[in-house]
Length: 421
Image (cartoon, rainbow, N blue to C red; front, top):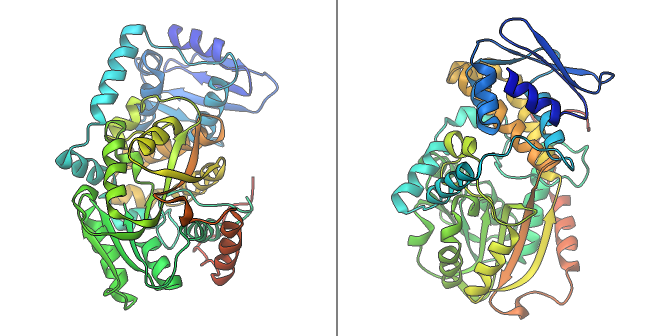
């Protein structure tokens, strides 16, 4: 416990953390007047496991039941408290040694080499959890990317409808256009574009159950002739498209493949076309994906820096027409996913086990803090081959988004949304 004690005394300045070791001894950190978040270690080696590599060890200890957060607080409270302190000026978790940083960097870069077979396996690792699992915490349309909160008090359902409206507005769609949706998820965006614009949409993904379910949705809506889904690597798509959407996809590509990605999409897009890339992004320079996330959640995944995306676009004959940085929207999205996940603990544990439930809690809480206190945001990059493809000013985006938002009333989830923070 001595090593973790030393680390926490240097780290925790805001808020209050109370730690009880396996032997009953208690230590307190931070502001004595603050409401305490209390955690407890259940075995002799748990504290050292966390201290040895905090960013991996804390998640593993919590998943395995070796670290317990005492009610009325939960793991989200602990993660937000610790990382708020770690991200303040002068705050930091114990930095790894130079050798360890080099080894981690090399491992992270190797993990991002996503050849076809590996790319498919990586996607299946995350997305082949059952449909029932995702239905327990996503909105009715199963949007598994950032929602767009025009008002933080809005429901998740309203915010996801508004996200689709914003994307559609930036695409400047016309009836009959042919759209490629790379990383189509469960088909919600493709069906939305067809419903509002009569577009022909091809959605592609490497997740078998997602593709199957999206096809079922298109058939049920009577639009299977115009909205199609294929289990195919984007690199194997052929033909020409008027518009391309890439929503939450490039995070799975890997930095070594950014050039290949934008070269292929440039080849697929009509000369007067528009591509909209929606991605999580770093506020700072290029980095690496943390080891816990690579191991348990997104193998092969990488969050790009703006500089990496812009340079890859420039090298492949793209012109950037518009960039928008969306800052706190994903924090609100993840907080609501976390809330709904916790409400369905019994169902998730029955589907899998308690360890997976705790893993998912830790993942969502950690991701939320990255958008609330850390260095993650979302980017919208609108790219074109000819600058004449979009108007002189961006007024058309807000005008069309407002029109589309007014057309859709958001469905209600089966439990009331949380009050705005």
